[in-house]
Length: 70
Image 1 (tube, rainbow, N blue to C red):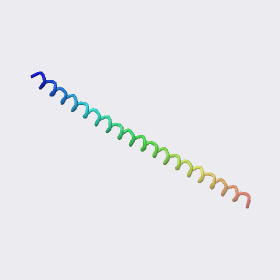
Image 2: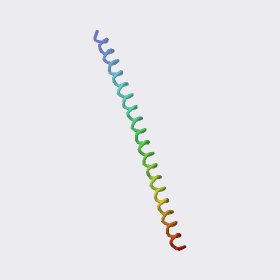
Image 3: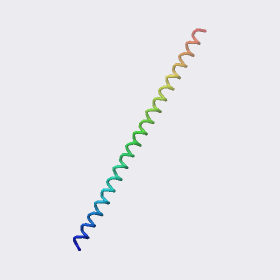
Image 4: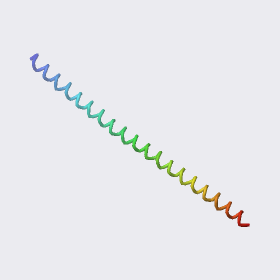
């Protein structure tokens, strides 16, 4: 009977361990996805800022050229 209890306890321990490992793995995957998404948002916002600076500079140059032609 003692041998049966050890086997049952070992099976329970293994099931809990497997469940824990699967949970940690999934959390890690989700964390990686979130980090990637935040990084992509940062790149997109940086790209937008670059475009806005370029538009502002182009508008400023166009304004200066128009004033120099007058």
